[in-house]
Length: 129
Image 1 (tube, rainbow, N blue to C red):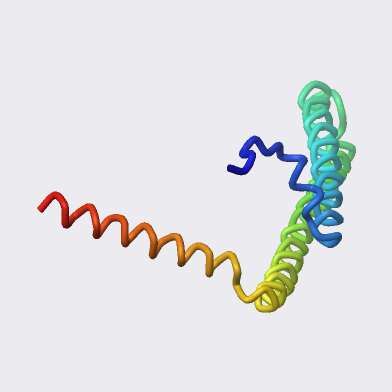
Image 2: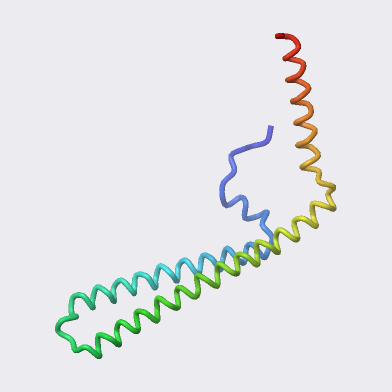
């Protein structure tokens, strides 16, 4: 019986290089997004605290800078989503080519297991009827 106590990091060894690069990029995007979100929240908080003592053009400039930062994060997340689609479909394409070479051994074994299970069930039904 195989060992079923797999850790999440044990999958890393089996991933292709393209998927590893994507996960590293995704981690960097997550760190940048959290850092930017913290800066945006700090900027909004400072605007709320000192907003009434400043003039309107200065407030508009600060709000425009916060909006530009949030737009950068939004564009980066959108680009990451598109990159995920590209990596996913490239991975599916390469995986389907590899499985054709292996003659669908996993699906063949799964089908054989289902046939054996059906035979066992049909044998048990005959005994109890």
